[in-house]
Image (cartoon, rainbow, N blue to C red; front, top):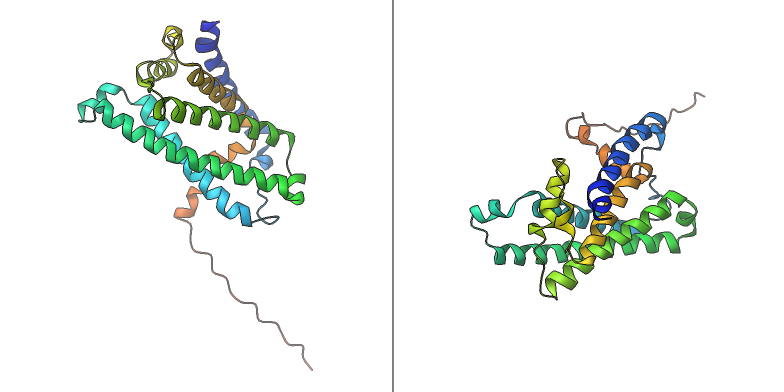
Length: 229
């Protein structure tokens, strides 16, 4: 079971992630969108969307730093374990609170606005459920273990295992004694990766980068033509 969970499931999820995006692009390019509902309700969206996206970007950045950068590298530049723990927990807590607050507002918007609720698809319900699970488990691990508890050095186990997955040398033994909350958070993240191509999350890869160099769009007022008498 340890081999299945920590050496097979990650590659199944990554395969679905890559193949699913290829399939989605080939058969559903018109559905490659956020399916925005801004015109239906904007009050809660105006606050919830920036909170969620900024918090998510910060959380992703923290995960990249914690999982991909070895402990020896941060120690080489003078960042000891205490300083790293202090910065990661404080920044992770702030980012997590922003994500939770933003997602709560977005979900409340879908539940309280009948017009927005009618646009919610089955894929949206699955996505919001899995996404909420990933966030709740991540916050429970960060706050419950690393902030209020005795702390857990995930860079000595989870980070090494994750880098092994990316280099095709996973070691399931590293995850054997990892606390359950961290294990559940990791598995929920793989589940999120597996459903990603079939949800509105595909819009992440369609950032309007071309807007940076496109020419200005000039709008002119249309002057009505007076009928001849």
